[in-house]
Each structure stands twice: as C-alpha cells, then as structure tokens.
Image (cartoon, rainbow, N blue to C red):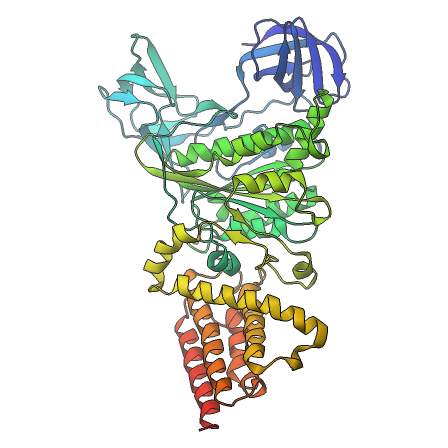
Length: 589
C-alpha cells in the first residue's frame, strides 16, 4: 500500500531532491510524481532525501508527491523468469510492448512474473516438517531443460502446517503455510521478493575445481575459468567483447545464463534478442532461451536503471544458484555501469576520484564480483555463479580506473588485442597479455579427462608462444631468413597453432564449438609437428622440406573438416604426420 512521504524540491537529471521525507529508510523503493516514476532513496539528511529515479524525469515539477512502498528495490523470484527479456529494474519488455506504443511509456508498471500463467506444482515437503529457510517446498517444470525448485524464503523457520496438493497454481497462490517460533501463521507463495543489493545467504563456500567449458579453444586450453570464477574481458571498440560474450552465452556448459546488456548499443542487443531464440543448445538439442534470461538496458534507456541492472541480474542468478544450478553471468559492459555511477555521483555533488569516478567505485566492483563463487546452498546442494564482466577502456587503455580496479577482484584476465582484431583473428584474446589463476584449480579435472596430458601440453605450447614473442622482435628487424631452422620451426609451429587452433570461426557449423576432447587431440597433433620437426632438423632436414608436407595443410584445416564426434579422423591425421616425418627422416639416414 503506497503512502505519501514527502514532496519534490528539485530535479537534477535522474536525481530528485525531496523535502518533508518521513518514515523512510536508505535504499527504500519510492514512486515519484503523478506518473509514479520508480526510484530509490540513496541519501538521507533529516527530512531531506536524494532519490535516484530509474525513468526519464522530464516534466517532473517541484511540489510533486513522493510515495513509498516501505521496502527496498527488490526483484520477484519464481517460475517464469527463464526465457524472459527484462529491463534494468525487472520490467518484462515483451509485456510492456503489448501495453505501450513504440517507446516505453513513463511510469508504466508491469509485474515481472506472469500472473495469469499456471504452473504444475509437485510438493516435496510434508506437513509437520520443521522448516528451515532455503529448503525445497516443491518443484515446477519451468522449461523442458530446467526444473524450478520452489524454495522457502531465506530466514523462514518454524513447523509446516500445510503444503498444497499437486496441481496447477499461479505465482500468487499459497503453496505452504507454517507457524513461526512466535506462533504466527506465515504463508509462502510460489514466488517471493528479494532486495537486489543484498546477497542471498548460503551455508558455506566451496573450493573451485570444475572448469566452465566454453567451447572456445583459447579459453578452455590456455586461460580456463572455474565454475564460480570471475573474469574481466577488457578491450577497445571493435575488438570483440560482445561477440565473445555471445559465444560464451551460447556454448558454455552452465545450466543457466543471465545476459546483462548494460548500456550497450541498441543494435547489439537487438542482435541478441533476434538470434538467441533461434539458437539450439549443442548439449541438449533444445532452444538456448529455455535456460537464458536477458536483461536489456541499452544506452538510450535512463542511466540510473543501468546502475540497477547489474544487481537485478546477480540476484536472479543467486536464486537459481540456491536451487543447485551452475549459473553464468555475462555483464556487458561494466564500464557503462561505472559511467552511470560517475554521472549519478556528479549529480549528487560527491567528491570525484580518478577520472571523475566516485571514490567508492572499487567497493562497488568488489561487492559485485564477490557474489560469484561455488557454494553449498541452504538446501544442501552445490551451486555456482561465474561472472564474465567486459570492460570498454577508452582508446583501449588498460590503465584506466575501471580495468585496474576490476583486476584487483578477479582471477582471470582475457585481454583483447587490437592488432588481432584488425587481422580478423577472433577471439582476439592475447596469449601474451592474458592470464588465468584457475589453472592449478582445474588441472585435476583436466588430468582425469585427458589422461594426464593437459597440463603438460598447455605448458609446452605456452613456452613456445613465449619464445616466439622474443624471436619476432628479431624477425621484425632482419627477417626470418637469418634465424636457424631450429628457431624457425618454433615460428612455424606457433603460426600453425594460432591459425589452426586459437582462431575460431563462430559462423562455421563445425568450428563454432569445440569439445575438450577435440581440443586435446588437436593440440597433440600440433605439438607432434614441433617435436618431430625439430628432431628432423637436428638430423639434417630443413624447414622447407617440413613445410612442404601435404599433411601440413590437413592440420591447418582440421578445425573445419572434423566434427566433434569424428575424433578418430584427428588420430588418422596424426598417423599421417608421423609417417610423413619418418619419410623426411629417411632421406638423411
């Protein structure tokens, strides 16, 4: 029930100054003016307050009433989230389109979850059970891929009085009633609300041991990320940040994907909204939207809602994590989010820090990334949230504040390189500037699934790439012909590795996704090329004889010609490589 708590004193862009504020707390959700614009109290001094409004304030005048719902900015959590497209404050854009014209009308209020739809509820809990917060009450088949586990809200405690029978229910229907320790009856519906700026509780945090398989070779092989890990993806304009996150959203083995388009151009989000419903998950054969939630807050939408969209996305992710799912968040981009913080901070006349960003920018970044992790949930299962946040440094300068502060709080750094992007080498992740601190954590999983070869192969190819980097400094000055063949074979191997392995075509039906098994076999063939080639050179062969082998072109094309379920063909190429190398060796015996 809304009540008037004050009036508008002054309007400064998306920030409203209010007077006569009574019965209000920090971060309370309010509605401003006759259009009931959604806002949030961000500063309080006596009866004065600063309100961050998440809609266009044009036309709002001093003296307008301010209403309070008596709760913080929250999201609705329940069945029906998957496959939905929301704005930054969890308003479903498709429902808004049906009730509005070409543009989002100011003050429009649409519930996040469909009140008309019925869900087939199957109870798990029984009457008489002693209830703890986070336990599973029952289940709903939300999509063909995902079963939504209806959880008791965190903090709930008492004895269950009644659980609804199996059958169809709406999100507002009561599915359980329990008596709390004071004896008061409490009803639990099919959905509940949760404040977006408050972390949902867990039993404890678990070590990160399982890699998030992305199907992108440069990531899985060279710079892996664990489920529950954090990644920053910095790069200048046109280096492929958005496209890389699209690929991760499409092909990673997370159970749920939450894609947050925060301040990005409308045409990029349009591409997501058009392409995602048509994509098929390679692991399940079902549409990817059945496990995806999109939050679209483009650059032409109100800047304040951009700041809220990050928290909306992470809270929805925590809800599915608490059900025991592995969730991956794509935040594109945190630079636009930081710019929103800078603008709002300036409007409230706060003291600026580096490049005008607020002094609390590192704190906000830390609060966001620390909500990732592998956890034991309140219901006793394991769940995780992995965060991939892109950063758009002006001019590709990685020394700017958002990139530097983000690096302090993440353990994986995928640096996008302008020269690689200009050469149409995608993903344009630099193998010299990037790093991952999850290699040791995920190595046990890889060793179990690679016969103990992954760590050795990865270290060998990384060593070769480092050597190539040093040799290229000489080549740029005097050319490759002055190098001995024992060093030129390093250049040839690295060129083969970059073109036949690291470069990946997201439009090719075979190359767009690569299984870990195929990655390992491809890497083994390329390393065999180097080892056998070096042995032959030491016995008298020259680099031109090795380059002229017909099997070399087969190695270069194997990523396109061999599907993920035809791995025996890579073994055949490897056999032909060994025979060809033996023929070269026989020439000098």
